[in-house]
Length: 174
Image 1 (cartoon, rainbow, N blue to C red):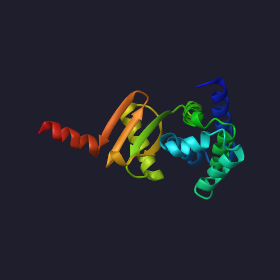
Image 2: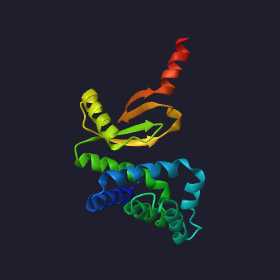
Image 3: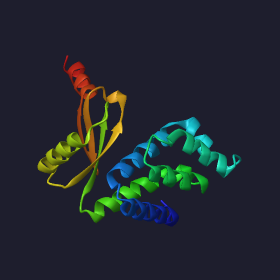
Image 4: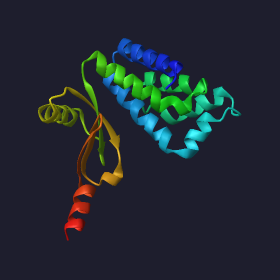
């Protein structure tokens, strides 16, 4: 993470707090950063400096327009236009860490086969607080390989309650 990435993260934090859609935009940025990171073709296209910046931004707007909050589109477009697509995940991770530190919380990255609604996220955050003693902010990553259940990471601690993990344990026991 470069000093410039830190500046982007601080700017992202300032913008989403000012716009007032902190949870929604943070979740969208997190998911989009992971999507771009995991999709070689999309990452290559958005990072290709031989493609004019306006065209790369248009790709972002075409893909995201109407699907996510306009602030999310603007922030991702800014990073893409400035040729920093490969740093987006790091910028978003730093932004989430800044946000968590401002609210005295830890980030709990939760992998789930399905999207969790706000009530499920709230209940999960409460359960994690009881079990870890930490105030947590839940960020969900959709991961079909989980099959069911959840895999939660808070810092270096991983809590694996996935169906995949349970099936693996059953196979090992037999």
